[in-house]
Structure formats: structure tokens, C-alpha cells
Amino acid sequence: MPKINGFPYLSILSSFTSHREFVIEESSIEDIQHGFSENRLTPRQLVEFYRRQIDFLNPRLQGVIEFNPDAGDEADQADSRMRSGTKIGDVDGIPVLLKDCINTKDKLKTTAGSYALLQAEVGGDATVVKRLREAGAVILGKASMSEWSQFRSGKVPSGWCARTGQGKVVANMVAVSLGTDTTGSIICPAKNNSVVGFKPTVGLTSPAGIILISPRQNSVGPICRTVSDAVYVLDTIVGFDPEDRQATLEAATFIPNGGYKQFLNKNGLAGKRLGVVRNPFSASYSPESIARSDFEDHLKTFREKALLAEFKIGINEYLRKLPTSPVRSLSDIIAFNKKHCLLEKTKEYGQHLFKLSELTNGIGKEEQAAICFGGLKGTEPKLIEVAYGFERATKLRRPPS
Image (cartoon, rainbow, N blue to C red; front, side, top):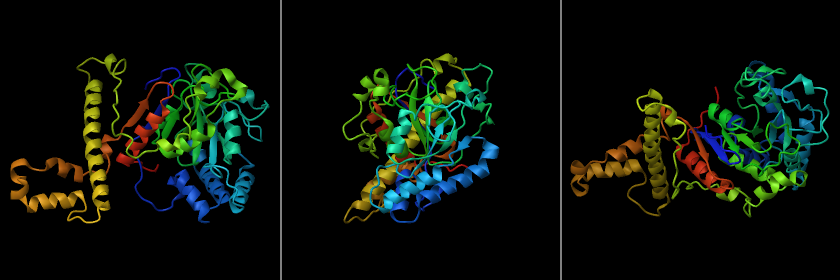
């Protein structure tokens, strides 16, 4: 997994749901906001739903250290704003779990997973928390973490802390979570757990009020179900912070006018040239090794399957929008070519790529892979376009079971 100091990374597992029914577990921020506006859901109901999820799942998964006793009241405040027409942001009423190294000035503790800080009192909210609150987000609680970000000892298992023990997969226990990443603490959980993790350029999000290993490398970013959710959160928490002028001054110049939502482009892959990082990763294996062979096979499969899936999605959408057409789908074209084989010379030239494309429904289960898109400082707009375009083309998210 690439870890280059200060550079942004956006890691997604190639999975996404295609159904559109309103189910809280898999609802995006946009879905939830529609639910609020249509009076099908209230922020209080959403908080209570996640509380039940945590009560049921957390004894086994140990992914949440503390639940915020004031979360219900915060949800009611969001509901009042919506009823009065004074909604204040894309994340208004959205529950957020915070990694246990991010300060909150409330009834929650900030301990980095250690009992050593259980009686400590913080001076105020971390800057990113202030921005979440200002945008109306509901602080749901603190998420478990590797104690002291696994910097206490090389023997401490990843995901273990004294306060919860060995944490496991956090499975739909919150809409959005906020993490920190020095050398993989956002990217790696995203890779392993079928979610989107966004590590922004260092300094794009303020480190003020956060327990860090290295201010030079650490970045605060979202872990969410979808790229769009991650971007909504990113837009909320980025910006210059006078409390940490040195860390945020340069990076603030990278923030585009109008924010990052404008780069949620379903055709974002078009025209992009992607480099595949082989050195030093695959170079560490011998040319005859199974790992290296598998890497090249998966890369080839990804290219082929992505193109096949993209073509079917794109041509079907194009045909659907035509005012008049004898064919309305790729399957119609295949049938046309078969029926008019002399005209189209189907017997001579075939249509095997069309047939393979028609068989796709995104990328097949056997080709699921964690994909990490990385770039130079300030290249978040391009990363968002690529990742969102890839996510929309593959549509393979699988809900946790």
C-alpha cells in the first residue's frame, strides 16, 4: 500500500449496490437527506437506529469505545433546524463516529485507546470536530483504534486497544466516520472492509486537537460507504486553521473554488492516464513468484472487466436517451447483429466483446479488489473524478453480512 508523505490517497473496494430502495444500512448521505426532506426519517430516528446497531453488534465487533449520551439531543437540534428551514450543511443531522484520538469537548473521552488518558480532560474540540458541529453533524461516539496508533510497541496487534480489546470490522454502525492516517490507518481499513477511505494532502485538514504520531505525515480524513459521502465530509472539514497555521497555510491554497463536490463526475475516468506503481511493491518479488503473477493477472482482468462493464453501462444509457431508435440496449444490438448477420457480417467478424460486455453486471465477484488511487499534493480533484467514475462504472458494493 503506497505511503508517500503528505500525498493524498483515495482507497475504495470495488463494490457498490445498485438497488434504490430506502434502507438505512446502505443509504448514502444524499439518500438520508432526501429521507429527512420527505419526512420519511428524522435525525433522532437515525441516531436511535445506529444505537441499536451498536448495542447489537459491538459486543462482538468491539468497534465503538463510547456512545455519545448527547447524540439524541444533537439530532433533535438538527430536526428543529430542518423543520424551520434553516438546514446548515450537507452533513446536517448525519451521525459521525470519531477515531478515539480526536478531541471532543463533551461527555466523551479522548484516550487513543488507552486507560492512561481515561481521566484526562481536553481543552476543546479538535478543529475538524468544530467544523462538523458547525455543519450540523451529530457526534455519535468514539471509534476504537490501535492503541496509541500502534506506536506503543511493535507487538501490539493491529486494531487492539486496552479499552475495547481486539476490534474487528465496523459493520454499518454509523453513516460516516472520521479517522487519521500516518502510514495507513485510513487506507488499510478501507481496503479491508469494503468502504471508501480518503487520506487528504497533509495540512488540507487541520491536525489541531488530535493525538498524532507525526504532524509531518498525519492527515485527517473520512471513512464512508461511497466516494460521494467521503467528498461531502471532506468539503466540511478542510480549510486553513489559525490554530495550526504552519500545517494548514500551504495546503489551503489547493482547495478549489466551489469545493470538491463539483468533481463528482460519473465520467471521471474518461481521458485520465493512470500509472501502476510496481516499484518497490511487485519488484520485491521474483519474476517467477505466484504473487507477482497474480498481480499482473488481476491488473489485466481489472482493465478488461472495467472496459466491458463501462461499455455496457454507457451504451445502454446513450440508447435510452435517444428520442427514436430500433435498439434500446446492448442486448438489442446483439440480437440485431444476429438477425442481420449478412448486413453486419456477423459470421465473419463476430461480436464476442459485445457478448462479454452484456454478461457483466459491474466487475465479477472473483475480480473484487481494493483499489488505491494516489496523487501528488493538491490533486484531490483528479482523484475524486477517477474514484467516483470507477465506483459508478463498477457498482459492486456488497453490504456486510
